Amino acid sequence: MRLAELNVGYATYPLDDPRMSGFMDNLDTINALAERSLGFVWRMKSDSGNATDISVPGDAEIISNMSVWEDVASLGNYVFNTVHARFYERKEEWFQAMTSHHFVMWMVEDNHTLTWLRQWSAWNIFKNTGRQTTPLAGTSSIKALGGAAQ
Image (cartoon, rainbow, N blue to C red):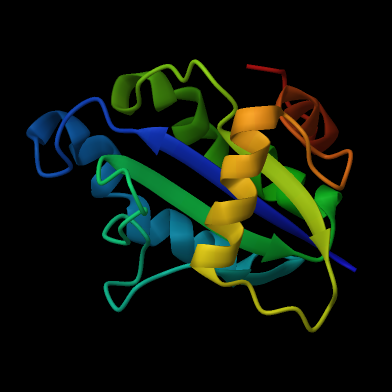
């Protein structure tokens, strides 16, 4: 079994706004770091190399990130023990505070292929009910990764 994660958010400004440059100008570097990290398996991306231009059904303003890792420890190490942590600490500069669930993790079979539409459907069930089939959900997931609950 492997760990899948989905993280969504709303940018505070349009992605081409100069106030988003600290995020957008470093996105390729941070994504490349993820791909080189121990335990990384896969991440959602378009032909652009990232996921900022992948449309979310029913909400064109939301930005999403979905990836698969060997385990929680591998994802946690990447998020909190690499240069990614510096960007995570600055998220309030670029993203609106979320008022509902915005991060979820779940276990997938090693050979499972994630599809955006299927995962988005599962995400909406979780967002609207707070329920999913695994115990890795919401702010407890951040704690499981080794970070402080947000």
